[in-house]
Image (cartoon, rainbow, N blue to C red; front, side):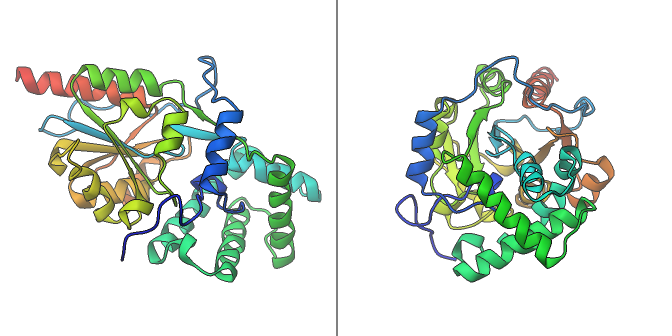
Length: 316
């Protein structure tokens, strides 16, 4: 697969907006300059009661690099996609429970990962992209136990788009409040940090706008690499980056998707952590999908575990 075009080519398609129109990356960045990122320390970060990271969970080697997924790991779009779908349901008079849609979203996300691995959605003709979005909606509704006949799916697709038309800036990204303390903790301990994101255009400008790019030593975007997570080549592009060159077994990747983040990292030889911000992950299911990946409730918990792990290795 060849190198994909950057900001001048494919339009940005943030992971939160599976069903939304594809937005021009410059418009996306401009919307961030018009709407400041949330930095309210009291903002709810949806941290779940994941078990503490066990002392031996990170293996025998020190952790020299932590790589981070971007969407739903470092930043979140507000309103969330399940809140938007609930609003779309209200538009057409269909009862919907936001909590149920949030959990059911995992099924739709798994479908996205599977389809995007076969052929990136952004590379498909318009008709195929629209067919994918309808199928994505159908799976999401079915997983939530809601009507999912073709007419209902099409009606909700239109209502979902209307939610974006009612908010021309497309919502607001916010950085989870624990991100900066976690990155600072790792930096102080001498652990390198990088982003690995599946996105259709370089996410560097977005990370800069949200004021955490300076804490990253590299920002890797699949659109520029030419491969999508969980493809091992996306992770190798980060591991081989001259600013952070690190052996796979000296690195940990953390993201919110067991398949694209957990499986991909493990296959290349990295350690893997799945962040369960929304209380949706099941340990047994995670063990089946990505054996060896650990579940964490926050990035700060992971950073603390990495620092403790490295300290123990240094004094052993």
